[in-house]
Amino acid sequence: MTTVAKMMAAAAFSMVLLQGCSGKYHFTQVPDETKVIRDFAIEITPVDSSINDAYSAFNLNFTNNTNSAVKIDWNKTYFLDNNETRGRFMLAGTRFRDRNKPRPLETVEAHETFSELIYPVDYAVHYDHGWTNSGFGTGKRGILLTVLMNNREINQTVVLDIERGEEKTAEEETEAEQ
Image (cartoon, rainbow, N blue to C red; front, side, top):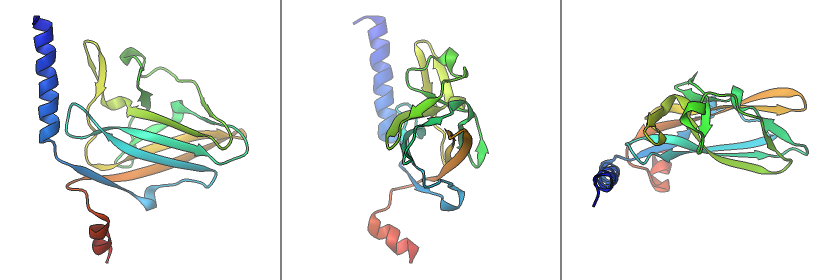
């Protein structure tokens, strides 16, 4: 086995070990800090990082419920970190050196859904063969999404409260609410 192969195997084992030792997180949407208009449905789901013990990205699902195409303005769409904007997002496949370059508008046709894995740029970490994202941890995290519709700019926010701890069952959630 070559030295490079041994190093790669050790790195892979370390990642598995880190994942096995990681704690669990759960999240809930923060209604008072989430602003979504009825023309769109926006859902973000945090995605676990493969190298550390925290979420590192969001799975974004944006549904256009209007009768005409709209555009997502990635250059005015921001990661929300405890209610403050903290950089923009990048997509998988983006080169690290291009992470801060302007991005073209994303067209979402009428009654269509756009889905993408999005990473906060400020958490991108460079390494020899590309980049990864360090985790953004617990707290209120989300997206301020800018949409262009009929020559109007519409800002929408979705905020999640991410906490460390075991996920609760539906029964435990109901008991906690009472």
